[in-house]
Image (cartoon, rainbow, N blue to C red):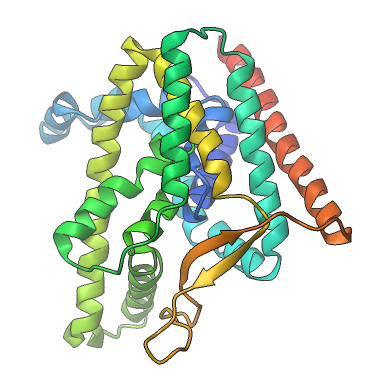
Length: 339
């Protein structure tokens, strides 16, 4: 599936990676939706599926160029570069926007999910009993996940590894938010805030030539947690890609209908009009993470009043829909050029 890519294609692939990375960081939003609507979801899944025993044999034997071509290395490299850049830049901006303009940010995401549903349904013609059942199953599971109560934080390394496997679902399953799953598992702050902050602080220490962190048990523990979580994420990414590659090849219509159901079910998570519920300590104060932010426990949703703020939010929902339509247009243009 390796294809010749222009400089413009490479640039936009990095931008798509930025979009996937930012979406994966936000609870309730799935990076897989970005891949789906932008027209590179199947290439993404099939490229990951190439990371198999044959790829490892090429790597072990020193055939690096063959390995690079076999796994569609240029595509994956550019995409993951965008995700990594996003993790330390765009996602930080999103954190600020959610804190200061929460309603409008969720409105844009809600619009993007609505636009995604339109996009997938528009070209889906294979409606029958099986695909309708698949759609309903996807909606039920998506809604069920949306309204679960979160568990308590758990830094057991086996559980952290499991969290890595599950959380990466947001990249491979459109509509299933990996970040929201981590909230439900109780480890969102531990794995996406505390451990990342520990890595950031460690990198700064190393740059300054300060290695005192090596004698800090708490820091070392956080780095171990991040390492195990990353290993679990890679395991989940490769495993899920093989499963999805198989089902897309043999049961494409049913799979797409279930994914569409997931996306519809996720609307409950990104509903703009909700009150954020924060975790409370035994002393009755807000539980804060290492960055001093209040730890999210869940959301309480409500119907909006008709006022100027609501009308502005509706405008942002429309903006979200237009973003997806623009991605769809670009995806169609890219596919025509590659054909």
